[in-house]
Length: 609
View 1 (cartoon, one colour):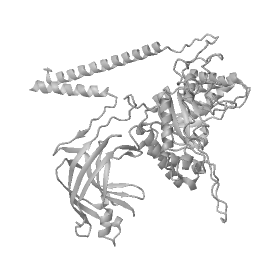
View 2 (cartoon, rainbow, N blue to C red; view 1 turned 90 degrees about the vertical axis):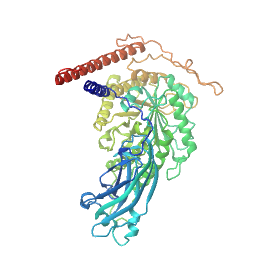
View 3 (cartoon, one colour; view 1 turned 90 degrees about the horizontal axis):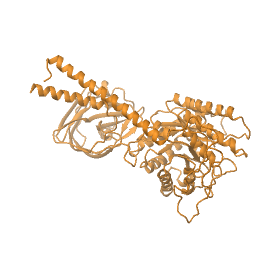
View 4 (spheres, rainbow, N blue to C red; view 1 turned 135 degrees about the vertical axis):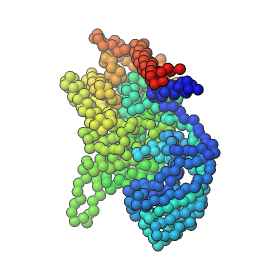
């Protein structure tokens, strides 16, 4: 028996060692409980919440016994728990499950009977009716931790009716004893698998996603128009970008003409947007979906803060719920290029002119809006709690990153823009150096906030300078890649200005710009100027282009390359080598730990067996 205990102890220790190497999220099956089982993480308590500063005051938590009556009795000095309550509060019982994970659901049924409260200097009060409560949980992430893993039963109005002449806050401060009979009649935790991609893989973090996004195109002047219908981005356009090697799309959407003033979005239009995102992701693209607006309601003025906050909250609830099913190839941006298009309201009868509204005021309002949007997104669905979200400084200006403030950094990035390059003639080497410095500076400022910067708009205007624009695209994307981020060429469909393709028929006009972006993002040499892609736009009646007829046709560049990009086989060999080395290291550590444990047992007992 003694030897067996030693052996079991060793197995336990070995299991702990193995657990150290287990880093993947493990799905949690649905869980039910048996009568009399103690549930340490399911707690019942009486609480008060000050609704002025939202501080919580609670009696000690009581672990629950499953499906058996529990006689609850709390008594204490009221100054210890409720002494700091202000003039306004919520008050009652709370049941919470601290073990629920983000995205996990649960269902509960409990009763609270024989409720008695005693306030200092007053007789025992037993006028509160019995409680029979059922509820469903869906645990979500919040800025303070978790939400949706508890249910409250308010006693506020019962107390107010019983003591109409006494201030409620004063009564609660004098609470000295609570007794009741609590029973957790039934409780079941639902299955939890965490945020998952359609193929069943776990969501990746922001940094892994950025490393895979490659070259990007910002599709403006399409869905961000006030009169957009949701049909402006076609399959032919997506195939054109794919043929150029573009992997990521930044798509701002204007909902102004498709929602009411309170933020209720027309579901038919939102469904069109979802279908477009689905088409793009199914073709292998990453998509950053953003909210654009043409109305004054999005001007970040202090006077518009509360009304716009409510409107953004309602519209983003609908957007987040609609988009939750997409995997980590969908990123969401809070606001696209926020600027003030409305002047502050001035009182004509004011004796003195109002103080001017400055950038700090704009950024204060923007911070409040964007924090609220992040909380809305994080609090919906199963995948959204882990989704990567982009925030934006005022005017998308990299110089204003330092004045931004936000409360969360997990899976966040900052969206910045660089104005289109206008000069026809420029020194390539000097310009390339400036570009790389500017991108590195923007990313450095963003990382001071513990997030990276993504360049969601850059480009060079068409001034009959095709060679220079190609070099610009290559240099800029290289600069972004060097600091571990992504850059999106500003696409307008107007090839006389900055566009790469014609929106009208999805024909290619400047394909080498896209090819150069893709090459730079992959760390490859710039393609030759005579590299081509298929230029025939598909006829409306024909089938969608296949992979074969949209394949990029490249011509070898005349210069020799000394740093050839690794082939797929070489990359695979590198990954396999890394896996083997990691396995060897883990094996050595594991064997070493076994030896140490054996020696410890032997030293202590003289003989292991």
